[in-house]
Image 1: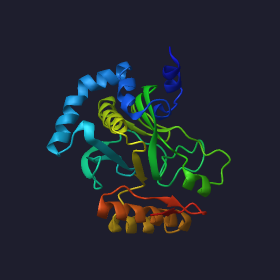
Image 2: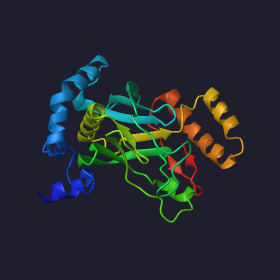
Image 3: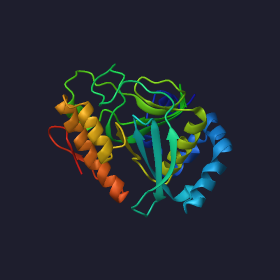
Image 4: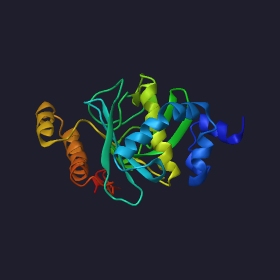
Length: 248
């Protein structure tokens, strides 16, 4: 086994090891990626074509909704600014409850604004895309000594804080992601919301959690980003204040 294979198994990001033009070639060295290509590449190519897109000119953005158990995949051409929703997938298992992840072992799925930072074609869960939890907001909001980590979008319907998909669906999502990475998209955005944050839904949750001001304030901050993306369909420009709040 060579050095790159060992690092991938350990979860090291390929983006630190190979250039964009070499990325897809390196991924194809792995049987599960080759199987996914054989099973799914024609299907996703046809899906893109119907939406005026192609694998070799693709950027993607992912949005997950915890309450609805849904993951939405958005796509655009590399030189465009505006995304279009391409497909919605069902998340096939869940853990934890509404609210952000703040420490190791709380079984929570994170909530916030992240990006893909790892690609694992030799995952224990078939294929997996790592998310950069904890991000700067998480670190500034949490009081825990150990915030945890290793949050993935992965295959196999088991989870202790991740976003699991069926093997059939993770093949598609992984292919979209590695093609986007091969096209030079170094940080695929992943926005994770507690629920679809429409005004009506948010009012429902405000009533349900009326005794938890800290949580409602956090969700109001997330809703600002949700509203901007819902309106503009563009990647958010996100910074983090000293208290951990997001600024858009």
